[in-house]
Image (cartoon, rainbow, N blue to C red):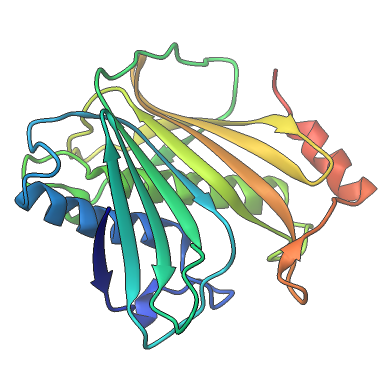
Length: 238
């Protein structure tokens, strides 16, 4: 196991004063870059997919954010925690899988939204950084939720887990890309949002995110009410 520590920033927080979902991926990416420099992870390996599972909210702290990484063949597993006294339970788990990039079939029977790429999103090769793709999908989810679920109270659900399968590099361009987005599952206390970032009929990246009902006062999961489930059911696509 390899361990790296990084300071937290004020800009890492969201409107609930928790560390923003996509920031965990930045912490993991910083550790992966160091592992690559150390020769633990090959620099020429293609990332096929990444996933993050959120276990509990992380608040602002002056203590270091610690990333513990374990490499096992084509999989890199990373636990993200805080260097607190006597506590090592992770706040999130990030999994990176290396190998061939899968080809997905685009959905043309679901709603779509435009998304613009910024030059600051790009890596040294001129393609959108993998962690930034999570941020682009987050932008689409927020827009979809605010448009179709605006009557649900802010903070009434949070991201439980999110994964992205990478199909091909996403270069910068002036015109927006198209992201197809839909609700693919509705449960008692969670629902699933699927997104596909496309260029014509090619899926460049495919995202699956589980949203969990959330009680802000207790900072714990909760079941949806009947009205909430009804709203979600209206967006459901098989």
